[in-house]
Image (cartoon, rainbow, N blue to C red; front, side, top):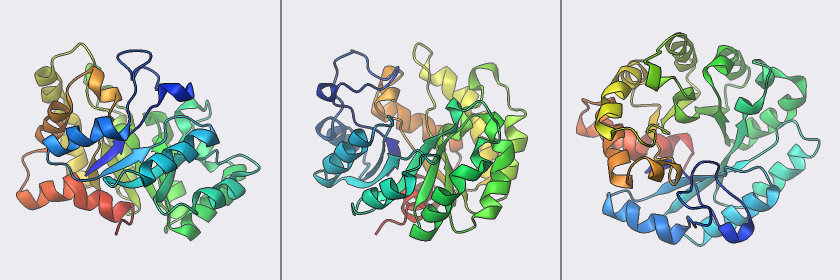
Length: 272
């Protein structure tokens, strides 16, 4: 399973920042399906990358018509006055498995602990939906406190919290990820790995020093592969992105790889 990919329809005047090789390129279920099939990936979790409610509604409709889409993670403004109403509307769709918030845009490192976010977080926990976190390393310091506050809510760190792989800078990222991994309700996506214009082989070698600590702390129980397609298409074809992730977390047994490439995501997002 691919636990992190996205769709884009240029006709809707939406864009994936930095993701499209061409400004008017479309990335739709029909484009992704053959890539998954060729790589032996059977299902995918699709993540909303833009905040408008209309985009989330379109994404859920598109996912409903695509059998390989196992679930959708829709955008939710946790601080909005109508967050609970929006969540109720989203939850009517059977493929909704979680919501996403973008803490990276927030200046305050403790943004996730703000009082006005807590009603939406409580509602997510009650509905047994996940919370995907687009975060940088600086936000991780507060994550253990938040995870302890909502033990029934599953938190998913996207893109490994964006460590500086290009600089080989494993700290303070490593220390904060170990603290996050100590929380049993925190999961992590090995996604957003590759940078355009740099050799995939060279990047994979550097990635091992970041992926190995995640394997030791989260284990294959709470680590999941995400391609970050179509953003990843700028850096490498789909099959190379998948191969880089497998090599980065290796060596691994067949059972561990099955967990990393599907079972962990299925458990995290409570898929049938």
